[in-house]
Length: 137
Image (cartoon, rainbow, N blue to C red):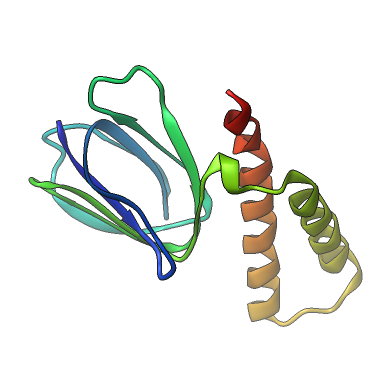
């Protein structure tokens, strides 16, 4: 067991909660963290983060976007640009954003920075749509 903290510029999602495992969308792919994991710091990509609180069988999920993950003997600290919980997601708005962003990629000439930004919007919208049904469970 170890501690998990997830913070964004706007909110504190979790502060020093006891967890059994954590999975994050790291720069080079999914990173699974269990007690005793080697210390590291990595950047995060947009995607679904998962964690299991101590003593619970349910897996919690949130969509996170760009940020950092620090793993130390004390626990895991996530500093993310955004973190959306399933109950906070407006699925219809995300579907519209996804549609608009895909059209933008297909029909507009974009700078590299604009292209990267639209790609992040698409990844976030897809991840939000993926976890939104969990709010009903």
